[in-house]
Image (cartoon, rainbow, N blue to C red):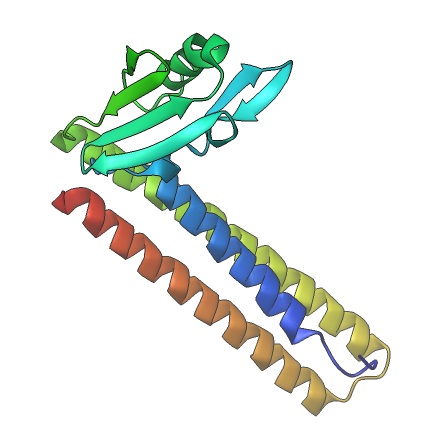
Length: 186
């Protein structure tokens, strides 16, 4: 990279990282359909440190409204049960030996609207992250301009960074619209 070039690949990669993070957050939203990823944010105090459930057992989805967690260590079954109950997912596990059955209840209209608001908040956080990356890119441009970058080059790079930003925001908006439709139609 010379003084007159900006690392667009890095900027684009960071913007894609914000979109990827958004998709992971969307996957953790319970939409009334069973998904193993809905347990991703849940951690259990195990072996002296917080541990993700997928590191303590096998998570399967045998049917659309049921998640099974087969805990490998029998001594941790109660801790996993408690972590799921306290996670805010609104799921009450049913114990069967080392297997926890997680029936996914139907969503009511109020809960659906709440989930769409939460999805909107996640999308706004992603937009802010993209705008922060844009700001970093613009700061690099200002430094390059003060270091002698030509006005035409500055304008070209400015437009490139803005195009990447606009494209990332469009992807975020499309992902949000898709998730909100999914939540409201289930």
